[in-house]
Image (cartoon, rainbow, N blue to C red; front, side, top):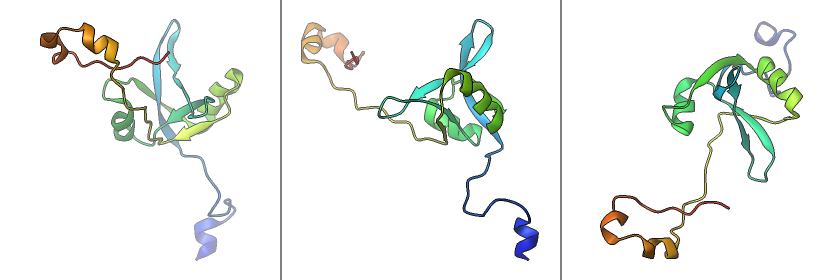
Length: 121
């Protein structure tokens, strides 16, 4: 039975290609451009998702995306010297911190309508 399941395939514990992936893109001058992201330590990485619902949950419903196979995405990343691919990441950002000087400068009537967040420098 195990021979029928695995045959000449890699060991069951080894990673395997994820198949067709949902890859976030942004508009470019020649069409779509694959979006690159930063890891927590600052390295560049590409991200992909195994289904559109996961992509929307992390990046929002307005994020454009295309379907690519893992080998095709890796081939696009190679000339950019991006060697890391994260599949189904849970992207996070630091909690915004109000800036006291800006909060004091905004009238109280508009402060409730437009919450303030600190911009990264």
